[in-house]
Length: 162
Image (tube, rainbow, N blue to C red; front, side):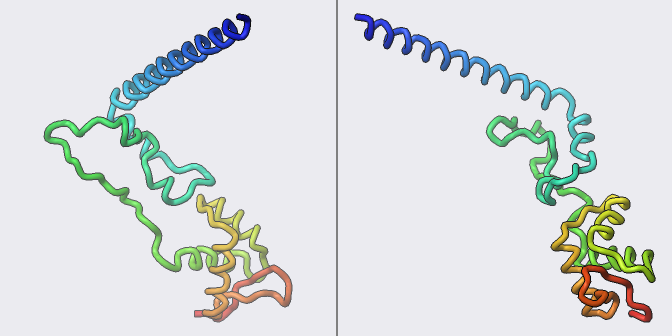
């Protein structure tokens, strides 16, 4: 008798939890839809905000205020159904090497480490990963625009480089 009452109570508690979760989820989705549909101008401004540190190119290219496809509304009559791509696309090939060459020229004749190059680029608002910096240094070395100092982890601009 005690087991039956306990199992009955557990089933009722589980039913209440499921109903509360469903009601809370539905209320949250209504609130999100209300915020997203409130002002398209504000949503466009939020999407144009600069990306944060640590986000990938794919994440920063996607608008932050875009609702999931499942809960999005169809476009209004007369509105364009096509998606607009951001104006600032992917950087051209070799851009990292050019930026790093500028940093090396600015620090010349002193040799700099990859961390110093990264910090100098961050000061200019550009974040590049260490493997990308190393790859760009290899490209500059192949063009005789940079040289590694001995067997150290420092690099310097090579004078007379093209």
